[in-house]
Length: 183
Ligand SMILES: [Cu+2]
Image 1 (cartoon, rainbow, N blue to C red):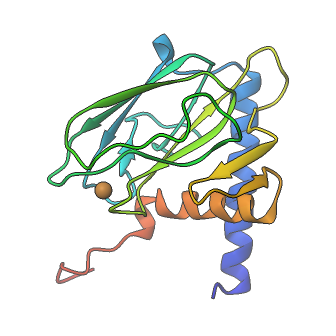
Image 2 (cartoon, rainbow, N blue to C red):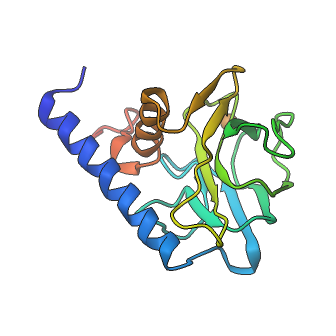
């Protein structure tokens, strides 16, 4: 269990990230060339690494509809690219691949929040928010579908918990190397 102070810090972090993402959206920040490149790495926290920071995070990208998502393998092991969360009814979803090191691509056209994971290493997360530039605010999708088949409102408690988990798992500061003599 989290202590209250830790919980408050996490809630503050989520509010900060949400506010920052909304700010970026208002300013029409988007991936250049309308593509997002995720390198799947062995680097703790940066498992799905865009190489560029959005809201303090290298595993999130904001793009417009039609964005091309490219996954490359820069890792000593194989991974799947598996859609964990996606806007309900989104074109091309669910998405999954065999375990591999090679590349895959897909195009996201439906606005909303997409979170990809690896089915072998379920702590690996990469997120894309496909934002329709003609609407105000950041499009998360009114409802989100999960890999287990359930659908939840994007404003639900479960969606908030999953978002919190995403930000914890994609922060390298939350990972320690216990194989080290000084973890
Ligand atoms: Cu993996």
